[in-house]
Length: 154
Image 1 (tube, one colour):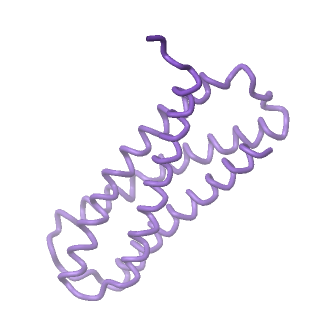
Image 2 (image 1 turned 90 degrees about the horizontal axis):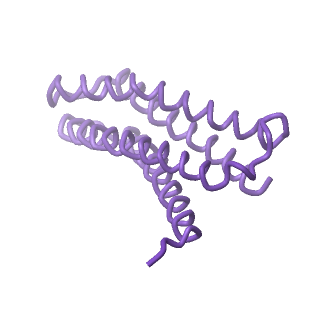
């Protein structure tokens, strides 16, 4: 039975969108939870949830990279050149996503360090930093999503 190229390309695009939704939605969830946590038990749960998000984030980042390459393979020859508006936006999106991935490493390391520290209450300053890290991640994904939508309809 021959492989249907159209079905494969559609599956790759859906997997790409699902990975983005996982990473974006997870960041917003941890951000929202960090705004509510106020005692040691909930603080420990927040750190555990953030740690699980970090695992899902890096898994999603890998899927996004692989499916992004798959999308380029499927559509690469028909894409506009980088000197066009569409091409410049595409390069901007790629650079932005690469920056998001690189700048996520300190967030992951900070959560791992919090996890190793045990289940002590989070200070107000630390909770504010958590909110900023996950709010920033969510905002960055919103920008990347906006660029992706512009590319899809541009």
